[in-house]
Length: 120
Length: 296
Image: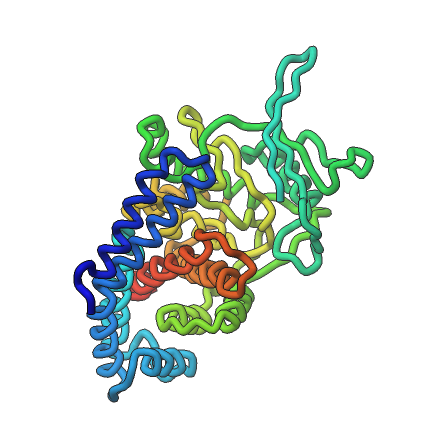
């Protein structure tokens, strides 16, 4: 991959530019510009964190399902087995694996999101 | 739907009002939303039950030339959730809000609803409805699937249905820094159902605006909400029932986000906002995992 510049640097440069012109925009465009900056943040984090997160998710899915495969196939199989009732919240390791993967996904989608701590 | 704020000035002084007006064709029989005439009847009924609302001034007639529309008074205050949970102006009243929300819901739930055409839905019906939307989206999200199956398998025991607001959350309530709840807005999703549906929707973490530690709307505690509800004549609703419906609420919101993304994917909506909402699904998934882990 080309490193001078890296893709995430290109994305960051565009985000910074949009942020710079935002104050001069009419309200609706200023709002959409803020959304656009957030979109580019997701893209940047997916570029940097995505590959490792997907590899880890594949590993967890393989362990749960007992065989190897690519993310799409394993993920679809897990959904099918949950739908069929062959796996549920009592399945050992299921909730922990889902939590680990979704925690990494949130770090890409909304790193500042404060998850529900659950009832106390 | 169009919403216009305006003021009428006359011999009696100046009066702030809000016009709500239908701008696209609408069929009450097939829609999830009510007609504006139904909404007007709900606002009148809620006011009669003692609930704070923006009072109805006029349900428009054909000769008004506004189409399907109604006019209410404009109540002063704040609806922006983030301000309610963090603005220093609300600091003094904030600890009282959860209890007030419980009281207001008890008032709404006491309405007889006579003559108001509303649909009804229990947990199973809601799950079926959203499962169909999820299947249609083509998405494969194990946490949504797990939550769907778990909630379908463990519905709460039957309970007498009440008239629900249907969208009672931080964002649809006008708050005043002095008095707290000043008006309950946005009645178009009202229906008959489980009281815990209304009590829980305001507890869904997506409406806590960053204050996940305050389960009711980002400002209050479950205990205060439920005590306020019972003290004002509402049924005794156990926290477990609220948590069940709260999970159903997170699931619903997750599937709604998928649906809004679909409108981008299929080309119906091209705004930059639309695809981004698809990335809000994961927030509902992490909340669902935590609720399932807590033994929902």
